[in-house]
Image 1 (tube, one colour):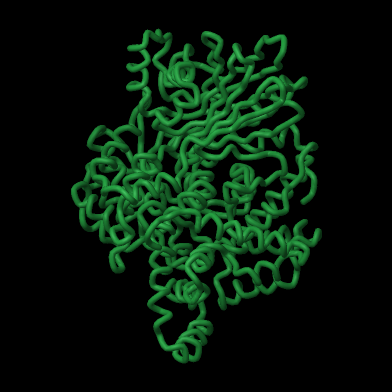
Image 2 (cartoon, helix red, strand yellow; image 1 turned 30 degrees about the vertical axis):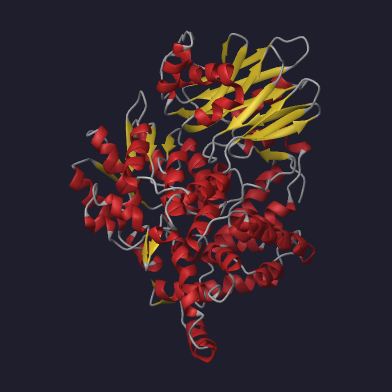
Length: 637
């Protein structure tokens, strides 16, 4: 896994690219290359930071120039050997054993038509000396990032937003719509740009920039269309599909390890990987006992140990007692976009530990919840229909007032059932799309509008309308499938894949996600919603498949999220930072946040009346992100 940067048609391109690639050092400590292409008509500079995984020789360093094509590539192509054999059958000669050279030669042979052939995660730029054009492309599901900035007749691009900001921050400004979206979601949906003019290349697409300043774009993979086609066809063999994907994701010239939380998804991936590599090791994480009590967190470590013992593999347990006051600002810088999810800390700390042990590649079970209906919100939205059948006088006169009066913390111990009940009642009576949005975002429309500058109300409405349009953009036949598709288009790329890439690369490690795969995606949507959530059993089809691989004890254990002791951190460790940096911060002083509603939100959290810890963590993260952007010269929102 690597970092890429480059410029096209920029008179100061070498200076800009040097600044960007320096900022991306964490993504590739094994090698660094910069190539200024000699072209009388076009100024082109490509750069690369390498984390060596496949073909460890210097011959595979990048940028890779061959036969008029020059490539800077970030990713792993899991089927590169099969594509290589096909190209060799066409007479292509290879100088390396890398997947990078396969990407280059596949592009020469097929151009953009090569992209649907690739099974892997990637973002790359390729310059064609014959046409003078530069093309950038990104993998189907948005695993690997690529940011682009149109500048004059050309473009600047990099693997991370911070690289472009560090080089060209004074030419940029914060986008207030993105700030509003971050406040609502606690992360940034893929269609929003944190900084005006710096765009994320959409997943499953490519763009070609030409000498005359024009450009043309294409989409080669559309999740809504793929899901709809899959839903209209026969069910795909899930067991065979997942086994094949995990096997493919083991391709590497370095050892591969696995995350193991003790949950279903990571246990499946670890068990299947162990079949191919009995020496595989696993990494797990645990928190301080007092933090777990306040959070009411399940003991995941118990199940991770049981699974590791069942497989007979070595488990590295990492008990963390992080200095959150110091770690939060570092995490905000790492995450690149305004993201307020503490789960990113888990990934960073596990990757740090793995890297210290010499491990470069780790497998993750991420993506299964989105594709197979595994989040609590999925079941809760289905239960909302049953709740609406309860007589209204009982709902409004008894249940809702009673739940509203219950505390979320008692005697220093969190009460999860109360938190969940209070959350459930915020969306249980809403229509399908609105209920789904409210089930996982931080505020209702009026709550968010009240918290923000009144002038931002239009942005609030626009962000909410964007969710409605995306949610309804499909022809899927059941609610569960519609929720899963929305998650795979919003939640998975906007939050989970983003923080996984940034946190892992900050530790100079690569995380692979076998469930986030086009073939697995098609298999998931070939199943009806009733096969994903059957009664109250979530991920039912996945659990049935898993009984061939892992013990029933793991399959049937209660659902546990990949979380952190957020309430303990917000209530204790971060109390002073909340008062000083957030209440006394730039978002309040500029009027983006209204002081009185913010103080009420904090008071509710500290009194134990409401669980507002996620809201406070997100707003504090947003404040620190905004300060970072402004200190880099980026203009105000």
